[in-house]
Length: 187
Image (cartoon, one colour):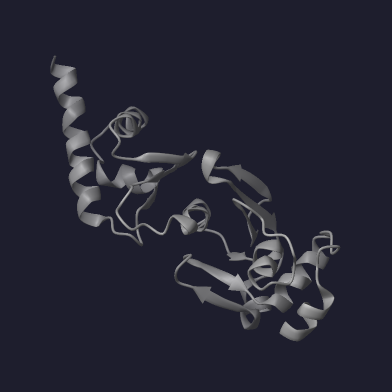
């Protein structure tokens, strides 16, 4: 009985803090964020499992949780997740994601986003939410800063169409779907 009482207190503490901090723009949390909320909890994995079962949090992918708030911009979940997953790296939205948004490629990637990163290349499976593709680049922020703008809705930097086309060529991606005429108009 004593262990059970101790386990409930960190869950209540987590619930109170998350309800205070979360809003529709900031409701995606990394495990490290949640560990800071309940520093006295020795078994964070157990606490997060209980919070998920209780419906307080939804697991997006390994190490990332969503606190479902009303009016959350669900279409940005993968972007917010990517920002939290690689918070310590240089990342920007590029490749097919930018080209599709600009109408330069005819097919829209469904539940799949592509980012350039200073970290390693990797595809993250976010279950029903989709996939995040990180593609390594050796470019430094100063190399591409003129071709990036910050997207506050997605919490990430976004490449220009010109930079996305450069990234496509540099990573040897298929250019078959690129509408050359539309690309020329935007570059």
